[in-house]
Length: 233
Image 1: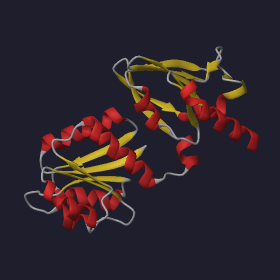
Image 2: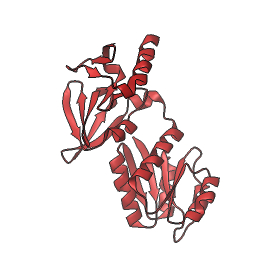
Image 3: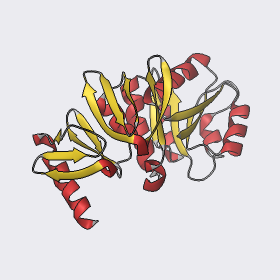
Image 4: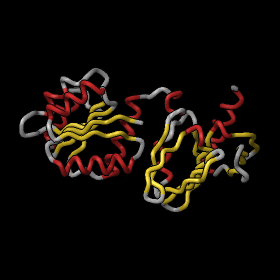
């Protein structure tokens, strides 16, 4: 779970960040309209990512950014593009100009994930939260066997647990998974490397899953990488 704090004196802006974080998944977000309260939370909880507005009524985000703990992943959110250079001078990972649209937010999150470079072991033993049947479901990485695409939905097959269906694209769910533990091998399939039982040319066989998984032509290189991984074990 990625811990985030958002500080913005506009409640509407915070509601958009919250909506996008929920859509992205696997994020624990705290929001503050008070810069003072928000910075107190940052100092005490040491979040992974801080979303910070720049031009607020009582405080300037550039100055607040200079007080952030070392190694904090900072993403500025502001309506004023003229602050971009100042933002990067305080080592902001990204600069989101309002109005913020989800694809741009998603790119910022991917940059943040690379910046944080979370240890593979922590990621593989982590979780993601997805909506299924109007409820948030916590899914352990270790339980996932294979993920199958169905238009704008995915079907997540788990070891000895019910299958989860969630309205999310394969690209979105792929971005939530650690590359050390999962591999996209087909436009319709993501496999858990720990679930691979055996494999042959263009086909992967998984434990706890009755059907073989095809390797798409576009993902042949990924298949070759899979061979390399298992030859090293």
